[in-house]
Image 1: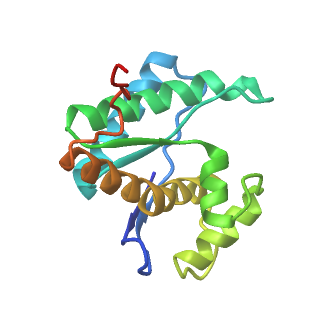
Image 2 (image 1 turned 30 degrees about the horizontal axis):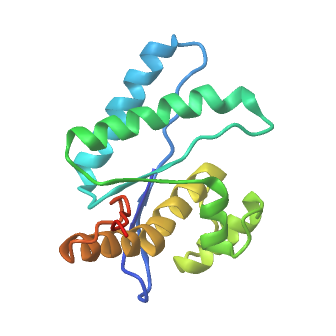
Length: 168
């Protein structure tokens, strides 16, 4: 989990980063409770304006999909219960946002996070850099999209409206 502060066009600042770990020896239901408690505590401590979660999709390494999806679902529920806006970003979208390359490897993402946040060294473990990259992506892309959606709604041309044709 990563918390980054800032706005588009201004330097971003690392607030905090942490990686929740659970033991594979513990039953899945209990592991999910541990994750829920950790996310709840994190949100309580940092009071974010929004929550960004990695959009889970099938990739070549399918062994991690279920666990990632379950953990993502917990984060979505915790944020929704608090009425926080939630955004989903794909891993390739995150990599492209922070490095300019949607296929960047973990080392490239870590190096860019170090540079963007003006850190002395890349965050460890790599999952910490991934969480920060997700937060940065949301500030850069999600915040802008929220402003566009709000402007469209205020103008009465909501982005989710279905276009209609007038009869001829």
